[in-house]
Length: 120
Image 1 (cartoon, rainbow, N blue to C red):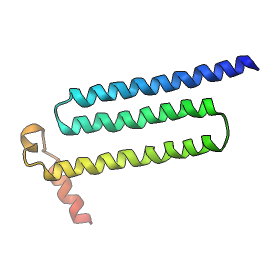
Image 2 (cartoon, rainbow, N blue to C red):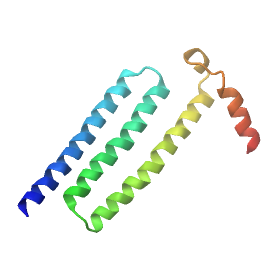
Image 3 (spheres, one colour):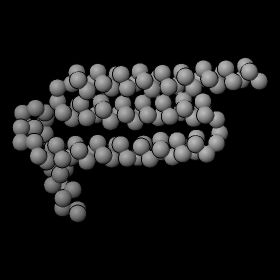
C-alpha cells in the first residue's frame, strides 16, 4: 500500500513540476517576444497547459473526492475561457492598433474582418 502512495506522490509532484516549468517557459516567452500578439499567444498557451498540468498533479495528490471534482471543473472552465479571452484580446489589438501593418503581414486579415462583420 505504501508503494502505491509513493507512486501517486511522485506522479503528482512530477506533474506539478512540469506545470511550473511550463509557467517558466511562458514567462520567458512573454518577455522575449517583441510583438504584442506573440506575447499574448505565449501567455495564453502557457497558462492553459501550465494550469492543466498543475491541477492534474494536485488531483492525483488529493485523490478521488469532491475537491478533485471541483479542480477538474476549474481545468475544464479554463480550457474554454482562456483561448476565447485571448482571441478577443487579439481581435481588439488588430482593430485598434494603427501601426499593425508595418509590424506584420495583414494581407488576409482585413478581408476576413469585413466578411465577419457582414455576417453579423
